[in-house]
Length: 178
Ligand code: FES
Ligand code: FES
Image 1: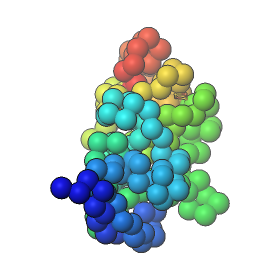
Image 2: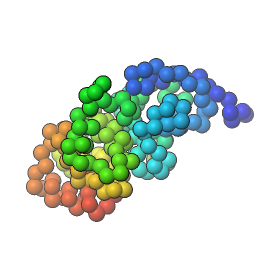
Image 3: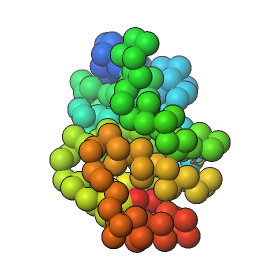
């Protein structure tokens, strides 16, 4: 078996059709970063633990390090580079700025893509829902309270006293993001 055999694939990335020749073992994350030149998507753990590599595939959030590029042939991929429309930031991008929801910024592209997927899923109704459903995205800088605030702000979820109380603990003491 030729491990280096390449397969032709076409992905629609950030509303542009892109053609590649890739080996079967190339992850979507490596294709985006090393072959498509889209380094906004970050590699943290490279094995599905941190969420830094989160992108949207057909509108659903996916850990790009856990899926092979060839599996996404014909699919629609959105990365952080595709979130803004021209000069207009995506509401989540603006909210992250407004809420100061990052420090080093390494987790931020994944957080924003994950939050976009969360919104599309339509399941989160409360602050606790946001906390739980964003828990796959870790932030080593501990910007969890601000990330939660930014996501809730865009979703129109008010941070009441009950949510704020439990949220403060969850966001500041452990890896459970939201
Ligand atoms: Fe993919 Fe950590 S780099 S989950
Ligand atoms: Fe640094 Fe989240 S802002 S890891």
